Length: 405
Image (tube, rainbow, N blue to C red; front, top):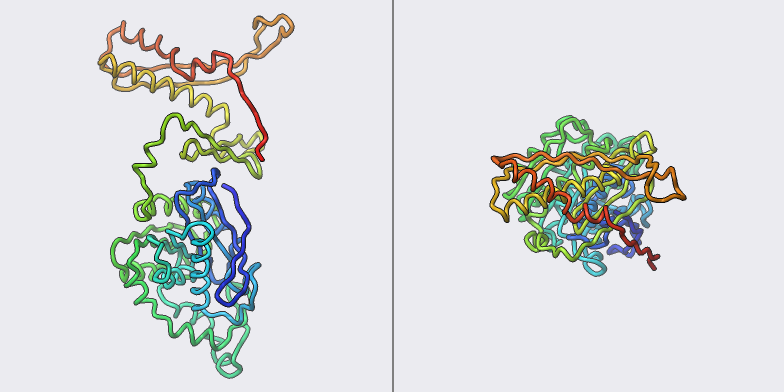
């Protein structure tokens, strides 16, 4: 996954700052549009983690700062809930012009309410996901109720929300009261996924129930267990992102059968490492992760490169045995391969100039299940040495390295 900084103009001509999270190979299967919560920005860790988890699954995500927030132009005091919805529509139109119109809309907290409202104006979207979203704008109105008298009298007031000060004007309050969330949810006409935590103390779980009960099918609900409102824990945010990617594929027209028809000759692997050692791998469209152990400065988020190499040998061995047994009609029920890898000192490696050379040593233990006779078992063990990866490791290989433009 990698991220591009971009910007686009909203209906008022303000330049809104955005980030586009892309899969490692720059070839997304779909695009999603993410609306952050009222007190957050596109850079908030929870937002970024959800977005990056989606990118790792092949979905590009555009996240942006609403007018007057983060790095975007404009004065927040001049905005309303309806203007935030208009910003979402402008973002979707920009994506349609420059990349691809979004097929997935995602909204966190009040951003969830915004995407529910905006969906009717974004025809490309086939799936909508809300995270800790309120079922009505009355929730936000309640947060600023203590300042309502000042707003009514002076036309504006500074309001503290989640520890931050916001200037709220009467137009904002009037706009909130005019929003009809029930009609927007009931008439969504899109697949809906509702994420909410029973432990959410900012927006209670009853809001999720109201959204779910009001929406028409197809709809789904996932409880986030002990997650907090802002998805502060990295695992919670990544879980949400991966679940959205898996769920949305059913509704966004991604040609799943076509994706399965990759040709063996494609043989395309893209690998990207940014900060730290945790490395994204996209092997002919299949996402993997490589990393190093904690003791070596990694985060242990995935197997090491040598463990992946051992896995390749083991997988190729097992597949080769399966293919051979099938061709012979032998009753092989399962083949299990266990491997270890180490670098051993070799006193005599055939190189007199390097008497203390080190040689890679793979230990491969094969278990064969099924009513095979002794001759069949011995033959299958011999066939293991003929698997293509085994031959590659035993024979000299050429590696050509070039520098990309």
